[in-house]
Length: 429
Image (tube, rainbow, N blue to C red; front, side):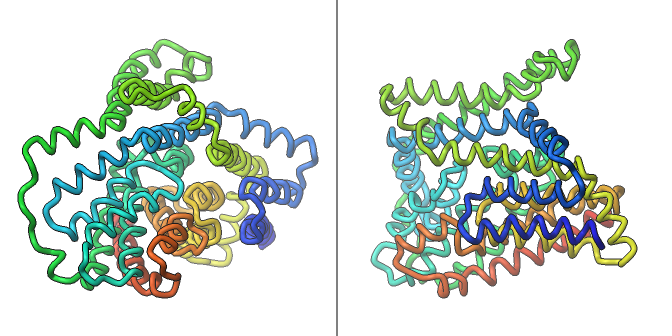
């Protein structure tokens, strides 16, 4: 099983480097080089594959979108918009336990690194003076913040997964929204330990609260409005230009970029954000570090294609009768656990399993996408290096052990529900 061993070796090198605190982007580049050299690519062909991956329109778009997304999140935080959103939502929801769940879920609509630290005070405030274990509060904050990461297109990991699977937003959402429902259901298990006092209704909210909340979330609605309008215009124009021409590339990849730019301008104008604040939002090192990670991931994908690894692995697995579903679930889970980030498991494991599935079971390939993504997501949720878990545990003054005892049952229920979903889709297709 030469191809499988070599590919897993390169994959293991990436995970090992990440575990040893080598920057993930550099780890992926090293894994790409090891993969190419192991399969016999010379330096020129390896460099050509890397250049093709780094300069592809899809790669450049993903890097730009990632930068704009994180910049917008920083602007909303600096302007106080996020604080307003959370405060209004807290007034509108009448049950404290509902507020404890809704606050991290609401903040989870924006892909902020370590965003769990923003919702943590709201979860704590919702619990009031009622005695609730700090580990349970941290678990609720951490778990429900990430329920949208299956399909919400503002997450870089979701955008990358859509790009790798070549699925548009409506098709991806229809396929993956079950994962969000399953994770929400799994999370309800945690709420069994919530005292009855926190499940009682409070007084009705003041008049006009919904209108105020709608206004406070204007930056999100602006993205969707401009994005939708640009998509409609682009759909009309795509029929008149060559897809590989500059105009075709802009029409295909531009709508989301325009939506984000429109939202950034609207946010800056509405909240009178200064030039200094704008520069601060877009000059953070972590923003460009994540954008650089996108380039590394796409280089890894193009190297895989250049050496033909998926086809060779497929032939070997067919000969040894290794269950395909086991491979599809296992690789993303390990990648998610070690990297602790969605773009980590999407970029390293998804190209392998998707190409493998397309070769071994092309007719039922659609069923494997949610399976791979779900186990990758659960892997990152269980990761001790996930930034959100680190900051949430630190805020609530708890440790990994008690938190894992709360989230493990929820993760198991989520996994079982998604295995059932996989079996249903596989039978359907």
